[in-house]
Length: 486
Image (cartoon, rainbow, N blue to C red; front, side, top):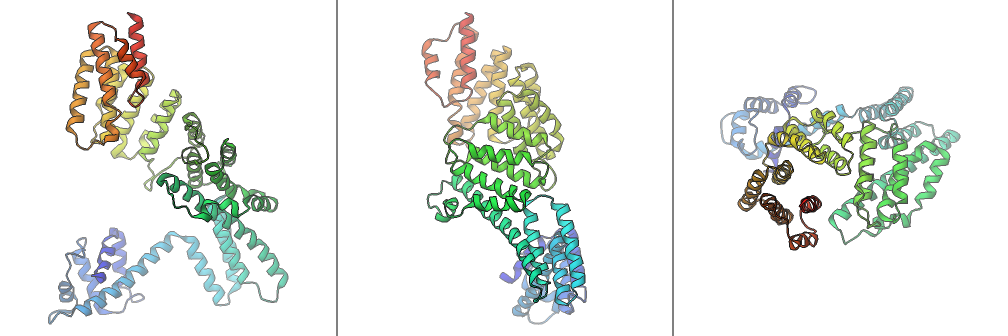
């Protein structure tokens, strides 16, 4: 059924794309076959119900060729031609979105037709546009290299001096592109290798800095075109920060270069460098110290304060990114900044996730500000089936009721939490491991409050000796407060 896969391809077109494709099938420039014209009318009549499982060879044959004995091979040949046109259509759409490639193809046609004057003017225009659009970016290196290769083609064979100058310029473009591409691949490999705990290392990638003297090459670029060494240097320090950085030296060099040039980079490059800095803390195999959340928060602030934000294709800030940035700010006590961030960017979240994410963070923010009377209204607005979020919200209710002195409500919330855990089969063992002790000890605290009796030393010893449960610090703090007050 491979021939019918073209129907799956066409069903992926948006309505406007489908209409343009039908126009293409009806254009004599692209198609002069009557059977394809009839097929286009048939597809138009069943749109949007184009489905390879529902449209049979028999139906296609009947609607395109009329009655008579169905010839399956004829239909397969027809669908093969349709597939060729569908792929041509996708190439056209791709070129419309990539003006650089379109202009380069046009320039090559000028050269092929011995119209070098037009080609030279076109190259100059493409270069100006690229430098204006890309500014100071990884993508610009690729474009400048390709443009210089094209310029070299236009120099007559007997113009040796011009050939030498062009070769020199192309060499530095190739060197920048080579270094940057190689280092980006090595960085990505290192990240995935760490996450997946890959044991079968690729020797060359695993020891790339031992085989290539990146520092000499970077120094060469710095001497010739100082500005252009920055991006490959960022990738180089990023790689070293994850592989050979026991004292954090390369991480600081990475941060310094990335921050110093933050206004020169495109947003997409800043996002990538931000992720590289993050990876230098999380994915480092050369530094076994605990992750410094305060430093991560300062990195986040640097980018946010410079209006660098991750956005999806629709322009929304992903809720996970918004959530993590706010949670890190709250956890290190930068509460005013956290509140400003949460409120400033709330309306830039995807509408479907906006209220849940915002109210969750504002609930957590107010718990940390000890504004307990403001917490419950935020929690009450949250409607979600997400298990981890549900579990965390329930723990927020318990803490808030306890702090407000609503001990009967806290007792009821603890009981409801236990029932929820017992009844829900989707909760993983790893998630469950952090909650039973939290519920056990908070239940003891609530009963102690209701009875007016101190918690005995054995309970406190149990808490001290157990590290794997939620809100341990808060529980110990509350127990000490209560016992000292008796």
